[in-house]
Image (cartoon, rainbow, N blue to C red; front, side, top):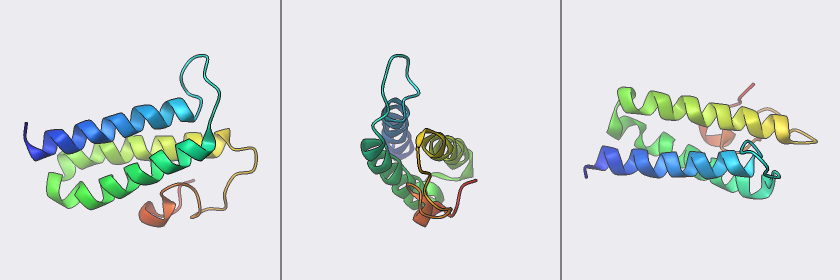
Length: 95
């Protein structure tokens, strides 16, 4: 398995776990503390790996990350200010 496949697989695992922790899976309660950690780790991976894996592979990972950041914001009772949500110091504010 090549580096692109490993990076993509790890990112998909982080995305899946983040989605569950955001409460997006059926019959799950959100755990936003855990979701924040997972999304921030995903943002670090995607940001660091983007130039190595190329835009073709990085674009869907960025899209998934952004969707999770928005889901986190929606699940939060008191949303973080723009730029302070999970991973946003790496990706910039998500609206």
